[in-house]
Structures are given as C-alpha cells and as structure tokens.
Image (tube, rainbow, N blue to C red; front, side):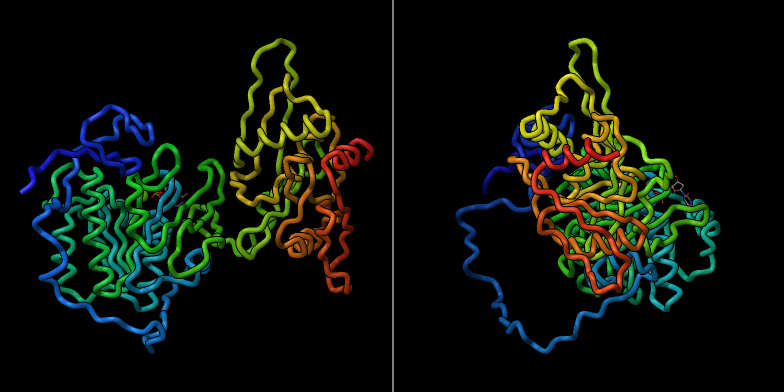
Length: 460
Ligand code: TYD
Ligand code: MG
C-alpha cells in the first residue's frame, strides 16, 4: 500500500501541489492552498483490467426519448439556457454577490412550481424568514416551492431520497454546502467538489434539473475551483454593474445548446423583469452629439444590441506615465487599437490618458467593436463629435485594414429600425435589404483606418 501523502489544492484554479505554499504556483493567487483528500491511491498491484462488470454498448441513433426541456417560466432565462431546463442536467450559476442570482432563481423556482413542477430550493446563505420576505416582495409567496435552509448534503440527500424527485432543485450556494464524508470547512476545494459530485449524481439518477449557485473569485472566474466547471453541463454567469439596472445572463458552456445567446433582465423593485427587446438599452439617449461617443451595433447570439462606446482623452503636460482605463471592453484590445492608430494613422496617444467606457454597464465581447472604438477614440482626440445618426462596426487588423464581420445585414437593419441613417463598416459589409421593406440606411464602406480618420476630420 502506498503511503498517503499530504497534498494541497488551490481553491482558485484547482491545481494540486504536494507542499503547502502561500501562493499558488500555477495561478499566482495568494492563500488559496488548502489540504485536499485524494480520491484514489494508485498501486501497481491493483490493475483495473479485471474484476469489473462488463459494460454494454449502444448505437448512437437508439430511439430514446427526445430531449424534453422544461421552461423556467422566464423566456430570457430559457433563451440563455438554449431552450429551457434539461432534466437530469446540472447548471452552475455564477455572478458577483448582490447581482441578483438568488432573486432570479427564486422567481424561476416559483414559476416552475406554479406550472405544476415540483421545486426544491435549498439556501445555505439565507434563513427562511429572509427568503420569505423576498418572496413576498416579489409577489411569489403563494407559489408551492418547497424551501429549506440547510447546509448538510447528507441531510439534503436523505430527505430527497424519501420524496418524489423534483423537476428543479436549487442549491444556493455550493460554497455553503458541506459533507461529513470530507474533511475541511465548507467552501474548500475538496468540500465543494465532493458536495457537487453527490448532488449532480442525485440529479442525473433522478432526472432533476439542478442549479448550483457559485461565488465568483476576484478575477471573475466562476466559483473558486475550476473543477466545478468541468463537472456541470451548463455554466452560466449573471453579469451587470450593481449601480445599473440591467443584468445579463450569459451561458459560458452548454452541453445542450449554443453559448452565444444572452438573457436580458432589469432589476426593479419587484424583482427581475425580462427585457425581450434589448436593442435600445445601452444607448444614452442624448440628443446633442458629443465628441468621443460612437454607437456600435453589437450581436448577442441572434439578437442585435446597440451599444454606446465613450472615449475620453486627456492630454498630459508633464512626462508622467499616462493611464489607460477600460470599462466593459478588453484592455489588451484597446492597447492594440491605440498602437495601430499610432502606427498607421500617425495619431499620437502616447502622452495622453485614454479612458474607454461602454455605456450601461454592458460588457462587449463582439470582435466587430473595433471600428466603433476607433471612431470614438479619433473623435475624442480631435474633439469632434461623430456624425449624428451613424453606427460603426468592423474588425481592425494590425495592418489597419477594416475587415468584414458576421451579421452585417442584421446589424444595419436594427440600426435603421431605431432611426439611424448611416452605417460605416468594412468594404464588403453592405448586406442591407434594399427591397424597400426596411427603412433605408446609407452604407458607407471604409477600407482602412486612415479612411476613418479622414472621414471624421472632414465631416462637420
Ligand atoms: P440577490 O438575489 O440577493 O443577489 P445574489 O444572490 O446574486 O447575491 O440580489 C440582491 C440585490 O438585488 C439587492 O442589492 C437588492 C436587489 N433587489 C432589488 O432591487 N429588487 C428586488 O425585488 C430584489 C428581491 C432584490
Ligand atoms: Mg444570493
């Protein structure tokens, strides 16, 4: 028998080391290593080549039951899930504290229960009284949700074992659960992994859709241990700025559907309201054009969303190192775009502070945002507002070319619908329908970044 060696796992990235260290050698996080219990100890004497049961193979086209999804009662939630809850699947829901995860799940739980599904909601974070108060506020107190405040996975699974399996089981949150089989405090890697494993097994065996709420670490990755992301079928993140009303539900991994659809909600005093037409949300609605602001028709899955990008450039007199601050976009991408503008267009940002902000707390992931960001930067630098009624889209290459992007036609159609009159994009991006069905939008192609600079400087 091999001697059991102590080992330590990082609660941030899940990597294992055999020595305790203050800093994880893999991800560089501090104070994340804690003792971990290995599940198996390999020994040369125990080959796995005999002694097991034989498994049966099945054809892939076996006439099984079709995937029966169940609606969460919230169309935006269903959309982000790729069409609703799949029985027997495990969903990990991450998001910053206070963003509205518990609210969203309580609403979904109540709606599923009202539509006749058995729902169990276990909270390890809030007492029954607190949840009851919230349910009352949401007008959902009458829904037949079975609620319990519990943290012991043994208690939970023992209770569930003597009941008909629920359609939906919510565990809020996985970091508060603990198993008496595993050493360590709740929230440690081995506890989180062990508890999730048992709960997921229950869900799979009993056809229950399981939602695990997970906390988010400082760097924004879900639920400390990355291991959880591999164990579940769907990873979702609930995003937004707490100071803004809008919340976006994004799926980052989905074994049963696409990952590019988002659900959009607005946090109101009666809970989360669905926003089924989000295309106007992230525009500031100003009448007067200001320098440094550009409108970008973004795509979220199959839906266009118009987003305002704001840039501010402050010239520094002294030789101090200028700041670059970005909210809602990738800072590496901004650095690249600034470098291309300097190298290909002769603009000088090196002695200026650059601030970039995406309005409404929205986080841009669409690569077609480059041209709109460049337009906002050039407009801010020249202190010249962009032409009113224009939208900008296209990817910028290191050579300064403006490259074609997907869904050019949908982007233009949506902009036209909202009253925009000009679309500036790549050379071959004009896919707008000219049959007269849509309101006309003038397409103004741009080949290179210098053309963009010329156009902005030439216009009023
Ligand atoms: P919560 O669902 O508790 O967040 P999480 O579970 O992600 O930590 O949401 C808490 C926030 O939502 C809180 O700051 C108050 C706000 N809120 C509303 O604005 N309206 C409501 O109806 C509810 C229930 C919460
Ligand atoms: Mg909560």
